[in-house]
Amino acid sequence: MGIRIKGTGRYVPEKILNNADLEKMVDTSDEWIVTRTGIKERHIAADNETTSDMATKAALAALENAGITADQLDFIIVSTVTPDHAFPCTAALVQKKIGAGQCPCFDQEAACSGLLYAFNTAYALMSSPLAYKRVLVIGAEKMTSLVDWSDRSTCVLFGDAAAAFVLENDGDPETGDFYVAGELGADGNWSDILQVPGGGSANPPTHQTVDDKLHFLKMGGPKTFHMAVLSMTNACRAVLEKSGKTIDDIAWAIPHQANRRIIDAVAERIGCPEKVYLNVDRYGNTSSASIGICLDELNRSGNLKRGDLILTASFGAGLTWASMLIRW
Ligand SMILES: CC(C)(COP(=O)(O)OP(=O)(O)OC[C@H]1O[C@@H](n2cnc3c(N)ncnc32)[C@H](O)[C@@H]1OP(=O)(O)O)[C@@H](O)C(=O)NCCC(=O)NCCS
Image 1: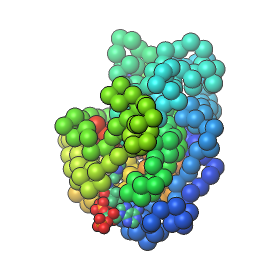
Image 2: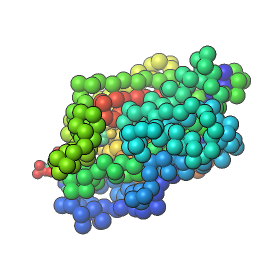
Image 3: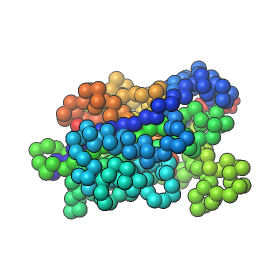
Image 4: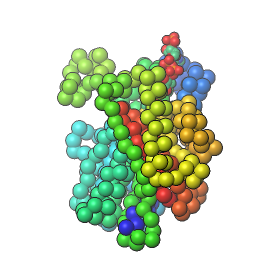
């Protein structure tokens, strides 16, 4: 096999909401937000801009970067917690918008760990007897559609974005797969520390659920922080052990961009602060788009060399966590 990342793309909405803007909306300060999270600004989708719109723009950029056309795709996976609708899947809407014919597609939901879960799924689909040749993997989120703009403990954290990847199997065993090693995990015992309580089948939408703001995301911040550091650190160590690599073999470390202090704590524990790629200051937490935006920025700025090893790690609602060692 020779399953590689052939092309990358990203899209971030035009509108920027900075910390000074948030100071006018809730009782907060730029100083508090930067000190506690490292976030300075985030991008906000337009009211009429959907997750599939953002995913489509990222997908078209990735297709162009890969030098293929949409009708050459064999499968589309969209990772998102903010689908356009409960159904149809957002991936089907992207398929239509990019003109990908009738290839199979579905959405995958593992919250902020979703992109790494989707890479694992795509790799399994391509390396199994199913042998799909070209798979489009997208992480796309309109997180601001879940944000309560009156809740200062959460509204400062999130932003909107999409990132897309064309994976291709060129059939050449000499190429080396992009997938070196992975570790996926989840613990449903912690499902209530980060959740959207209303709007699903547990609490279908009513006037009451809306009045009670159950359609907004709720989070136990300090507990989430603790679990994030623990799960990402352990997952990174597991991936290094599985692959027989050490931190010295790594060119870049890309942790989920949720909070600068979480990133620093994980980097410190696995011993690679100088290799960490950071953009949380510019985008905030874009959930399953976050690692993808980093990869695309590194790729397009010429900072990735063929054969570079990239250690990625994420965590999110579920709780879910994931780490993956990627060969460029
Ligand atoms: C949210 C987070 C930044 C809060 O930081 P923290 O140091 O844990 O702060 P706490 O929640 O303990 O709150 C400390 C104080 O700041 C206040 N506060 C919360 N948000 C604030 C804001 N935006 N501005 C000013 N003060 C704020 C709290 O009300 C609290 O005040 P009190 O002591 O008077 O009650 C931090 O817990 C965090 O990053 N958690 C993980 C979040 C995350 O990554 N989620 C996504 C997972 S994918």
